[in-house]
Length: 308
Image 1 (cartoon, rainbow, N blue to C red):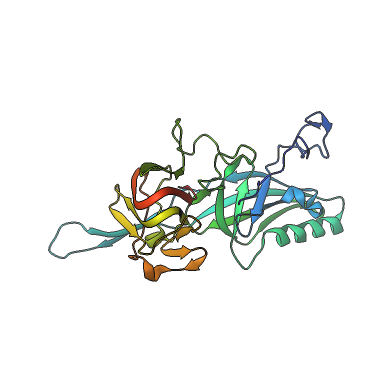
Image 2: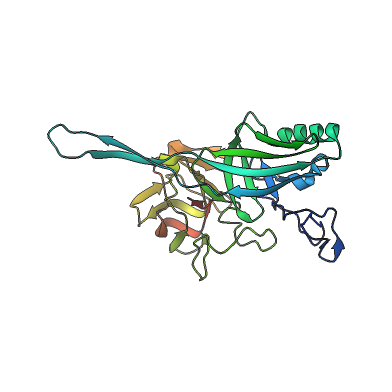
C-alpha cells in the first residue's frame, strides 16, 4: 500500500515566507514561499527534501508543469494527395524547476550543492511529487543541473527532470484514492461527483476510468491488477471493449485469482496455462463488466489513474 507522501504540517511545521506555521515559530523565514518536493524509487515510500537535515538552506521556488508532447508517424503514398498517419504516441517531456541555495559561507554552500545532487541524481528513474500538486506523480530522470552563482555562498539552480513516460499518474491506486488519511484525492482528477467503487460483488457492474487514456496492460504495459475471489470457474467480460478473460480451473472460497497485467496468478503462483490468455483493458470513462461462472464473487480493480 502506498504511504503518505508529505507529512502533516500540524505536527511537522515547514518553512514558509512568513514567520509562523500553525501557531508555531517558523524554522526559517524565506524571501519567497517554497514548494515541497518528495521522491520515491518505487512509488510506495516517499522522502521529502524537507526530511533531509543536510538540505536545510535549499529550497525550490518554481516549476513548469510538463506539456504533452504528441508524436505522429506519417507515410507518403506517391499516387495520393497528402500523407497517411500510420501511428501516434506521446513522447517524453521536461519539467524545469528553480532552486536556491543560501549558505552561511563557501564550505557550507559547497556541501549543500553536493547534497542537492545526492538527493536527485540516480542511475535509475524515480517518482517525483510537487507540494502544490500533491495527488500526482511523475516518473523522471535528472538532467544536468544549470547553476547561476550570486556570490561564494549563494546561487540559483535550474534542475530539469525528464518525464520519460510522457504521462503523470495518481499517487494512490484506485483502491486507495478515497483514503482520507493519505490525501490521495483532489478535484481535477476527472472523478464524477457520485458514488464510485472499484470493487464489486455483483454479477454485472461498472468500473470508471477517469484517466486521459485507456488503461492498457498489453499495449502500454500499464499497471492493472484485477483481484477475483469466489467459488467456480470465472469468466470476466468487459462488455465495453469486448475483451474476455476466462480461468478454466475451479476456485474455492479461500483462493484468490489475480490478473496482473497480462499474467494470471493463483494464490501468488503463475497459472496462465489454465486461462484463455485473454487480457482486460479499461477504456476511458465507464466500463461495463460481467462476471459469470462464479458464486459469491468479489472482484476489485487496482490501477493508477494516468493523465497528460
